[in-house]
Length: 332
Image 1: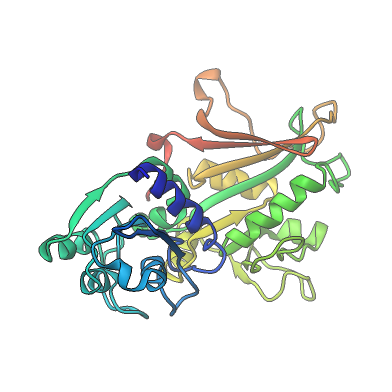
Image 2: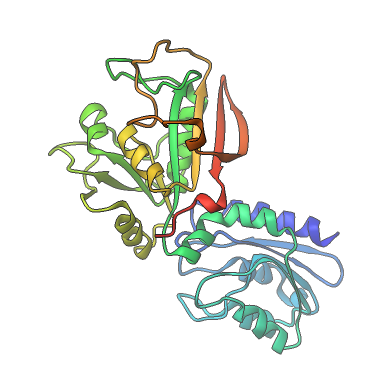
């Protein structure tokens, strides 16, 4: 059993915590006892055991002399639960392998330092790229104080999100729509513009999948009686909104439109991940709405460029995820 294999197992465990651990990070852990037995754990709901504790509880006395794998640096501070680093030392773990350091101001290497001071062998950086990808919303939130912003758009292959009359149900198929509800369950808040509320009267809740519904945010004023209530109605700047949501523990914000809202987030370089759901359909013409409202680029030199993160088949549709180049991201 290599370190890489065990860390990949920890990553699998961490994925099971995504919908229940927030605002804590979704972490996975593995304990390998001296006789080779494997015990796994993932972070539970806030106020309950972190992944390392779950795995060590299962291992019991076999934690002594064991190797513990954790996708994220063990915590070193008292929050709703005692420090995991202290428990690791107390239970006699010999070696700890960590995916990435925790950028939370209460940790930031202090967990690693506490383990080393107690004589525990520590290795950091195993499967770091994979862990960073899995925990990116949390890591971004802790590094910037703002939510990880995901913008979702369903569109025809020729780039139209609705017909001329505004109708758009449904451009994509059932698999893509189910994926959207999964994204909602993974997000702490969801945002649309007041125009979308007036046109579609969406609920913006999680359906079709297991998971919580996100907090609802409307740019502008939602009509009285709209299904989106209760919601936060926002009329100030987008950076101020992200600062507010970040302070309130929103780790991931899902932006579902409409075109003016998406253009505003895009122009201010506030989108961390663009998720396009592309249907094998053609609207034709140029007078149906596209994902981003406003005036197009004046010259090809002004073309915004990002990078492909993934392409996934969703039934008959495609999910294409694009992320900005690091230099494009705004931190203002």
